[in-house]
Length: 347
Image (cartoon, rainbow, N blue to C red; front, side, top):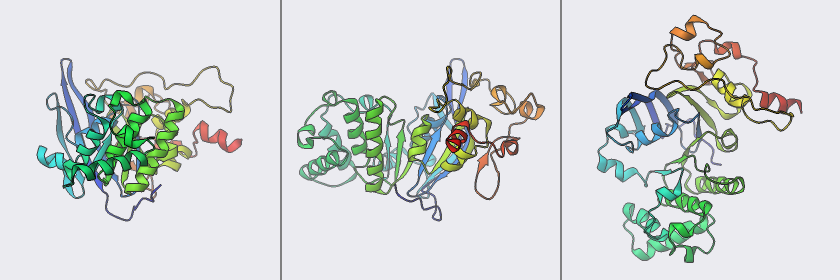
């Protein structure tokens, strides 16, 4: 894995991003005041339950949310010093697939079923580079070989339905790195794959990052994937960032009750358990968000305290180590280890 360059300027800076969607039931505030940076060479994991705003925040940065019903209410997203929120569609098309590339969750719906894999790869190259068909074909075959597609010369002339799920995802990764992006966004890249293929795709992603030296945003609900791949982690809940820290600190010393709940809901191999321990309750409605902390109805730390019910906690620093938490009583978690880490240390 490339070493993050934290002493350099961030490659992407998102500031106070708010994204809404109009529905028949009301306005859904899918992303609510999100702020974070991504640095050159690092892998930033974004975790949270479905509907927490992980994917929408990135789609908004790239101008890919449907407008209407969606709209960016406010916020900035500086990529390489330029605000993508204010870019025209033409400017966004120039950076998408070039300087910024995205690997989507389902490759079958991302690849065009009526065009051959090689045609789609070559097109992605030629849109951003003035190269001949022959050169684009050669580059495409090299990319397929790089990501581990067997017989790339023959596979180049096949259609997406002739590829397995894992091979389609490899082809998507090849397409994403075709133009050596500065930022690679992987949106649940292993969700639809079995465990063996997931491990292979992880290796391909690492190889792709080494090849391009790109910063990577890894959107996932899989904490094992985060532990394996990420340098830093953004934890999102109900459209907000609730914790931001390095991956070691998140596992060893989480400072938000939601992060603790995520850790403790994981199955443990060291204990004979009949039941998993889910976080109680359900995420709040993003149409009628409750006052105060959005997590307080499910929180073991709240204990009915008025501040949790009435005052929304800001994302604040817990010290000089750049550990941020949006919890009024984060300090009460000091000394707390997730059960996962505590058992690992004891065994």
